[in-house]
Amino acid sequence: MKLITRNTDYAVRALCCIAEKKEKIISTDRLVKSLDIPRSFLRKILQILTKEELLHSSKGKDGGFSLAVSPEKITLIEVMKIFQGSIRLSEHKFKKSDCPHIKNCLLKKKIDEIEKEVIKKLKAITILSIIKKKEVKVNDQEVRDLQM
Amino acid sequence: MKLITRNTDYAVRALCCIAEKKEKIISTDRLVKSLDIPRSFLRKILQILTKEELLHSSKGKDGGFSLAVSPEKITLIEVMKIFQGSIRLSEHKFKKSDCPHIKNCLLKKKIDEIEKEVIKKLKAITILSIIKKKEVKVNDQEVRDLQM
DNA sequence: ACAATATGATACAATTATAGTATCATATTG
DNA sequence: CAATATGATACTATAATTGTATCATATTGT
Image (tube, rainbow over all chains, first blue to last red; front, side, top):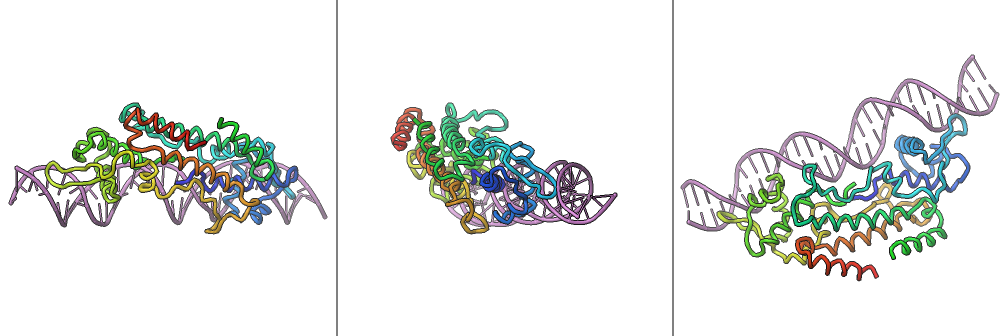
């Protein structure tokens, strides 16, 4: 059971790597060397991120990718949605209708509560918070604030 | 992306159904009628729950299943582990070794924190808490206590 | 112009997980 | 010993995940 699939993971790593170079453009080849991700797979991922307008791309010599959005505005959950679809911890449905069993379906309610918490936390994780230690602490505080 | 797969879901429903009958034995056929789960699939699930010693089984006429463990001692996470393996929200590894990228791998740390929270909450959900409204409230309080 | 370089679009393939089915063996009860 | 119910086990179908590969297109330097 995985919350995060490999393409999301790769995408996050690539975004981090690109974010660290700031303005500068970085090519697939350089990313492959830094991240050790299969080239074709990474290319596909970068193309998707570009289509989704998280990255800018440029063709030709010295072409490559750069962030289209500042790193504090890219959340983990956004990347997850792109590669894994919407976040639903449990469908808990039966044949397309809501679960008709178990009084008021308490299981679903409980799972939904957990889901809300998880989403809140995933929203608090940004590319910036992953690459910068200082910001991490600020961010953790924010998480604590949200939990109040 | 699902936290809970269908066989876990079915298993939980079956356990709830059996728990509600308490001491009495209930057969696969009766469960199928109550829960509307494909018979063969449910049989497999019940066999697994029996092997895992969450259920007792008896063969022959009037045979069937009953709880081997009291419903407040069966946690959701236990059932998930049986049907979905251990709970790991992200492997975040690369080629069998830990992720060597991104300083100290902050992403992994952050995911691990979320994972801990989720596991804590899943541990707090028991079969009893799903079938009994009163216990649910007690249980929610316990969850809040744990979060302090 | 044109060759080199780099991304864009797209189609295909392998592996694994999920979801479900089916059959024969075995134990229990009347 | 027949009816009934689970036990063991093998098989299948579908979908998701994890890639691979190829040709088209745009850009840049000579």
